Length: 421
Image (cartoon, rainbow, N blue to C red; front, side):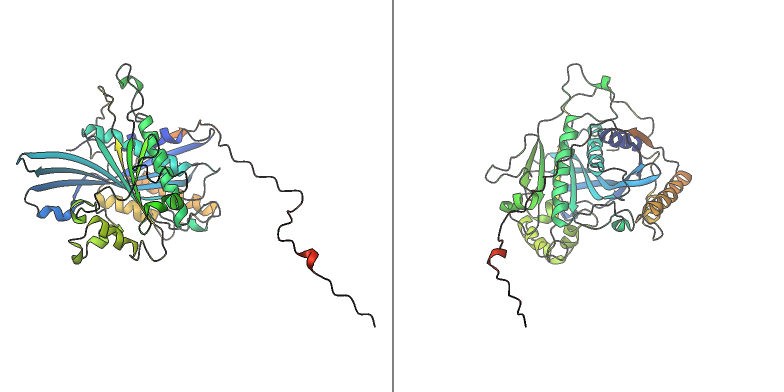
């Protein structure tokens, strides 16, 4: 089940996506990842089934983007590779490999020199990088999951006070993630991996690797009729359209499991997730997926006036035959950090002395972090220069020369005469 997950390949895929940003900007992409280590099943209750067995390995990945000598964006993800063996009604063992990536954190520092969708392109590059790894494991698709919850900062300490950082509210973040996953899936399905050489494709092969990806979204406490209101009229959700929407991404409302299914048997339980904490309670054993969503809507983390969302997307892996996929000389664990070293990296970036509230402090903190990484681990980086078109901003509407006389009651007000003595 082991396959190479090269951090240089991940950085190259992210850099290839960033290259589409408006031209004239230089970025450096740095990827830190752990070696594979065994973890609990994502559906732990299924281990009590005598006809089901699962072996799951996980790795953690941290992607950091620098502009100049300053950290400007970051993404942390948890990837899971599961080998399952299940005996069905035919009594024939069925073996399957599943790859699921959970995006845990995405953040910006507010130090980007000009406004551009850097975070969105970083996510798109990471999603695109999953193709290579999953292709090597011979799986048909890879799952990408995330829990969208608004917070002022995730990776960069005190960045919420940086005037250059644009912080989104609950609804704004949910809409941003829907648009970001829409773009990321479209980008990944329209481009071969940025690390693949053009001559590795079969002759006359189509560059587009698939027609449709399936994406699920649910906002606990909201109905499917609320989707256009919550996510915007351009969200891709269409009432009464049998769940179909945009040509390349099929958006569906809800979790990616039948409503009547037992939640413990099918719903993925990722670390540090409200669903995992809720299902850890003993009285949830018989909950269906529908009951789980109802209880999430009134939970402390997803209810109480909060608007959060769960996204689960299934990215099809290239059907184009890549007969001569470039092979890396290193194994899956070479160049990867131990779990303890990775935690040390997180402790360094989350240190209380790190400060991204202003440009000077952000540069000092960035320099301190990169020096620590370079001296202790010597992880190579990938540099990229953008060459995309400029972003066309919508022109502001011209202000009317005279204000409209709406609810103008000045003509009806009588002025009191001055009394002369």
